[in-house]
Length: 189
Image 1 (cartoon, rainbow, N blue to C red):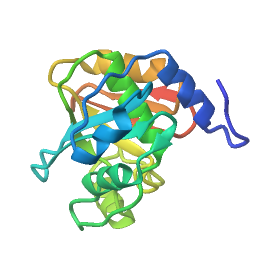
Image 2 (cartoon, helix red, strand yellow):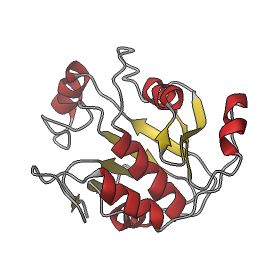
Image 3 (cartoon, rainbow, N blue to C red):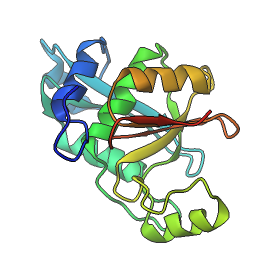
Image 4 (tube, helix red, strand yellow):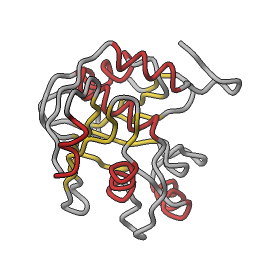
């Protein structure tokens, strides 16, 4: 696994995680069709938000290139809904989420419980729970808390750990898995 000097996973390591998976997806917006002709590597993310009622199903990467508009859509979707604040979501986190989703072999979209959190929202959640980190990667747009109805926390976390990229937190009681692009580590029972 390749890491930078601060112990964070590199893009090369994430590419390796994708090399172990096969992503086959159909475009969900009309202008993607032109990109797909002869496309070898496609990355797609599907999520729903119970907080806002929104859904996203988008191809965000084709043959080595991120699709800027799609990544922006993902950032808007993953915004802090409490204060309607948007931060660019780190593409390494999106890659970890997409690779994990592919590894569990389901078309069911992730249920996203938390993406970006403003510092104010994180402080409020920290006052309510000791499980919220003061310097959470959510504040940096580098984390997501996700669940799948069709897969257990154990199954989803195993897929995330198999990516060898970033942090994976298992929250069995709340039925979700935390994924981030920070140093590789695992926590939770």
